[in-house]
Length: 454
Image 1 (spheres, rainbow, N blue to C red):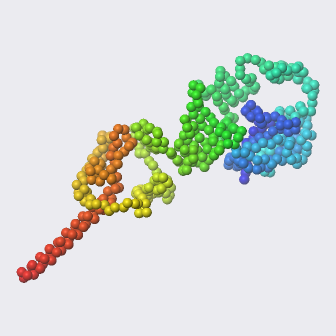
Image 2 (spheres, rainbow, N blue to C red):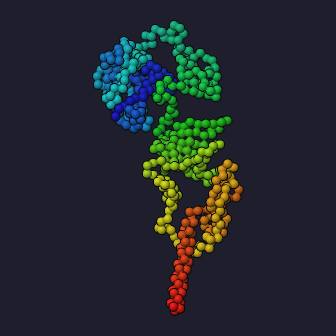
Image 3 (cartoon, helix red, strand yellow):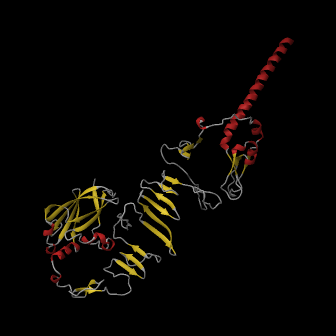
């Protein structure tokens, strides 16, 4: 598997000095011998190599990137959940040379990194590793450093001829600027840029990354099951936040309660942190909708247009099923769109034969009409029944909507007319057959009378 490293040893390579202020725990000399190295391991597709054992090798070249290898060592490391690993260069298993014998002040040195035997690149070491020289000399050997005794809180400051203790220059600034990477401007803080993008911005980061390359900021907790978050507050009161829940590795949104969650396998949960489907919505019965009812999922086309709203399944062989309490209740055919409802005898109880329905069917008015909510330009007409007429004859086929404002409207189960129609046809057929039998009997008697007359 091709591998790569996202290195975080900012003080050792040019161009990444901003990280010196962000990751101070990873900088400088780890001990008298060696210096820290931290990186994130990824495969060739950019995926983190989380929780894996790796073999990392370091080679120090003298003079140039292709110069003599004066020291080589290897480390066996384990990445964490974010693909990060740490190593102290100088404390690995030596393969050649001696780390303590490197003359840091005598030449330029370059660090080559190898991952599982594969070279990851070579970069020049600058500044921090050469501080190793300080372990081998006394203060008197440094001609440009003052011997003046410092006071508590002093820092070294260049006065034009030597480094001397200083209080840092004083002033009202909450920090001392160094270089041109971080800017403080009237309460606004910017990293790698000096001004805001919009007038409402008070903190901003610009990363010097190229096209298609990640660049940003991490919020990290020391414990793997911690909850790093980004919060929102007004008037000194926390209002909402997004956070990572380390226990089950879900990304969540909190707003007076956990409202939204995304799992690592791509499932989305609304009002649930444990979605059991690709999209899992839990309906809160205490929620009052804008139309004075309870709403779980609303699909709306909001605009002055003639566009339809659509609910569809796109797959070569995929019917659309409707479920209730983990049991299929209905199905739309992917072939012709026809709807089928469950009718398995094993699911039914208290079965009774329908009483006579023919009289009710014959007396039920069938009508043509337009709806009062239709636009004037929509002159289409509908065929059907009035729910009130149906309720007087077949109350089982009428329900009340609890969704609209005010009094609930009546709704008709037109599919329920199928068994009623079959029952009416059966009754009518029985009448037809009885009449046919009576006709046959009368014809036989007529034929007998005609025969006598002959």
